[in-house]
Image (cartoon, rainbow, N blue to C red; front, top):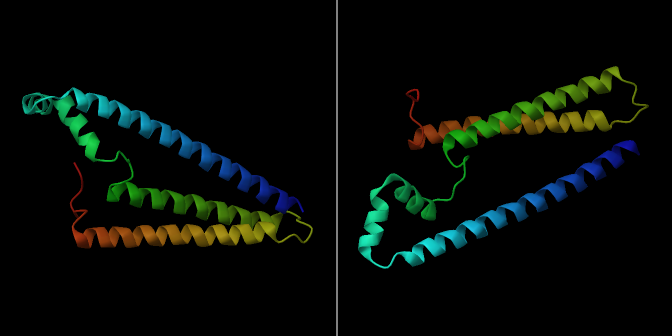
Length: 148
């Protein structure tokens, strides 16, 4: 019964985290869009737009209108996130399996089941990261030369 209570509490916390992070991102996006709209309404001629695009900060502003700011949108960021998640889940799963063998769980298979599932997810993330790296290199999104 204790394993079920933990899973229910974890699920509720995860749902609350997803809702609050989504509301926060929505608020940030709405505020940013409102600010961009106000700045763009002040541009009344092509000369004003050209002068805005002439300096570095104006160019970054105009790029931010068309490009969604997502730090993991590059192939490197996505692959590194997959590797990180894979190793964390793999280590967690191994720890749960070791825990189930060394601690008396009174016949409760929950640590073994959770550990096995986490190992599977971790290996899946690592495999997906390796596949993403392979495909990104084949498509030319990532070069084989080291980054400077």
